[in-house]
Length: 134
Image (tube, rainbow, N blue to C red; front, side):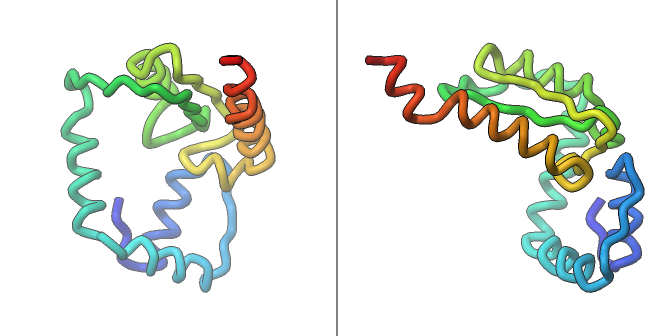
């Protein structure tokens, strides 16, 4: 899950994406360099995520609204995980699934991803919240 070479990163991308996409080698190389930052912390986080699967853990109570954007074809975290997370986060959470997208929905379906994000932000803008409380 933490690639060290361009080839390993390409393989990870192909697993994470529903659609086959090509990225220039330079872009993949730059992405890999950024991924190498805080490698130890990333490895610990991944271990914790894997070890927590199937175990009970309670989410904190958030005051703000939360948008979960989830690829319907996510090979790493299936939609059922998103549904469970939404339930755990409570009524302030919204789950929006994106068809024909995997774990990297923002890369595979950027227009759909941005449309859902803009709609959510517009509905929860500070101006809207201010007007509701007046």
